[in-house]
Image (cartoon, rainbow, N blue to C red; front, side, top):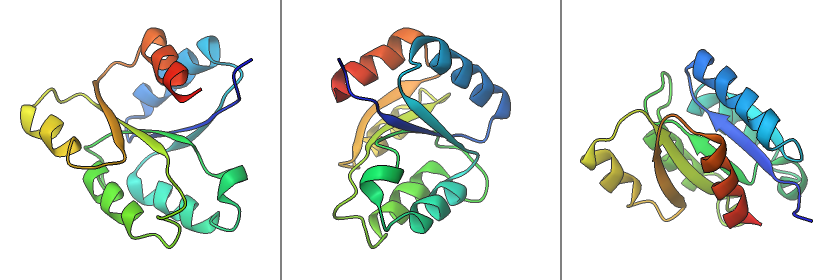
Length: 134
């Protein structure tokens, strides 16, 4: 039996979040899902839950690039500067509507970024992400 994983979607598109949540619930009910609508919300959550990262923080992040307040690139920089950055090592998948080569190359510069996925995220993509993590 595969272990239960904690996921987080960090994306400002509410409609896309709803679709992804429904896809997730139908195909991956054993795993938990947190939702954040920009990078700043997610960083605030991480900061507030640093006392017990193993039990409370998401292990897999589905991170959009283009968001208000704090975009995906700014989130990645802020994550590196958190006090728990050395011990908290989530697997990060960039999820973007942009197939731009420069974005894909930029994602490759971050050691924590596991993949760059162009939206939409399908049931098959989620299954692939989970099978790599288990």
